[in-house]
Length: 482
Image (cartoon, rainbow, N blue to C red; front, side):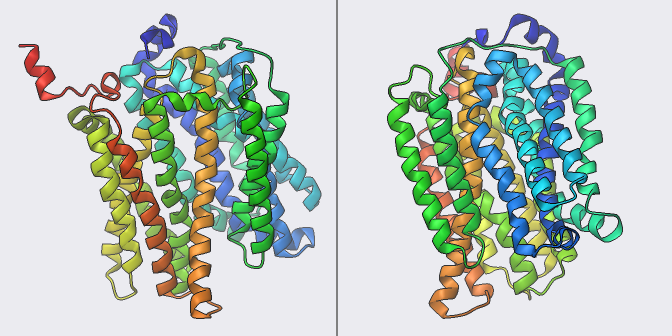
C-alpha cells in the first residue's frame, strides 16, 4: 500500500491532529454503541408506556439491526460518490433525527420506524467513520489513531446498561435518546471543521441486485442470530439463518459476474486483509459472547444485583483504555505477527478463565482478570483493524471498510448466538429449566475454543506485515543498516 493512498494535503494537515480526527470519529461510534445497549435496559418500562407486552418490544432492537444489515454494505459506494466527510456528517445528522423521533414516539409502530431511520444513520457512521480516519491519517500514525478510535467504541456497550438503568429509574426512558443529541451535534461541528472531504474513484454502476441480495442475506442472518438468544425462538432462528445462507449463496453467484459488487470478495485475495478478516471474526465470536455471558453469570450464578454486576464488568473497559497508552510501543517492539500471536493467546485464555469463576472467588481477583482480558482483547482489535488495510490501495479503501465492518457486525452477533446455543444446549443435556454455573462454564469453554483457532491465522501473517505502520524492524534488518 503506497503513500498515495492518502492525499498530500490531507497528510500535511492531519498528521499533527490524528488524535483529534480519531476522537471525532470515535465520538460518533460511542454514540451508536451506547444507544444500542442503553435501550435494552428500558424495554420493560417502554412496553408499559406503549401498552404492549415486553416481548413485543424486541422489534425495537431488531428493526435497528435490519437497517444496519441493509445499508452497511452500500456505505463505501455512497462515500465514494458523495465524499466520506459529507456522508459521515450526514449520517450523524440522520442518527440524531432518528433519536429525536424515537424520544417522541407515541406508539410502538412509530418507534420502529424511527429506529429504522436511526439504523440508516448508524450503518453509515460505522464504516464511513473508519474510512474518514484511513483517508485523513498518515500511515505511520494509523496504529495510534486506531487505538484512540476503538476505546470509546468498546466503552459504549459497557456503560450502556448502568446509564439506561439510571435514566429509567430517576428520569424518563426518552432521555436515552436525547443523550445522543449533544454528542452528535459536537461531532457534526468538529467533522465540518477538521476533516477534509475526499471522494473515491467510481468503478462501475451501482449494484442494485447485489444490494437487495446482501440485505436479505445479512438481515436474515442478524435476525436469526438475535433470536437464537431468546427462549422459544429456536425454530424461527434456524429458519432465518437458513434463508440468510441461501440468499448469501445467491449473492456470491451474482458478485462473480458484476464489475463492481456491493461487497467485494476479491479483497480476500490480499493476504493481510484475509487473515485479519478471518482471525478477527473468530476472535469477535468470543468478544460478542462476553457482554452476554458475564453479566448473566454474575446475576444468575453469583446472585449479584444488576448494578453490582455492572460495576464488575466495567473492568474490561478500564483494561481497554489502559492498552491505548502502550499499543504503539508494543507493536513497534514486537510487530503485528508476534504480538497478535502472544496477546491473542493470553487474551483468549483469560476469557476462558471465566469458565471457572465461582462465588467464593475474591471479587477483586475476578475484577483483575476481566481487566486483563479487556487489556489484551483491546490490543487485538486495534491490531486487526489496522493491519487489514496494509495492502489496500486508496481506490479500494471504501469497499474494504464496508466489507470489513459488515463481517465485524455479523461476527459479534454470531458470538451471542454461539454463547446462547451452548448455554441452552448444556441446560438441555441436564434437563434443567434454569442455567447454573456449570452451564455458563460450558458456554465460556465453547467460545474460547473457537477464538483460539484464530492463532492459526495469526501465525500466517508475515513477520514484516504492517512494518511501515508499526515501525517494527527485526534485529537482522537493523544490523544490515550498519
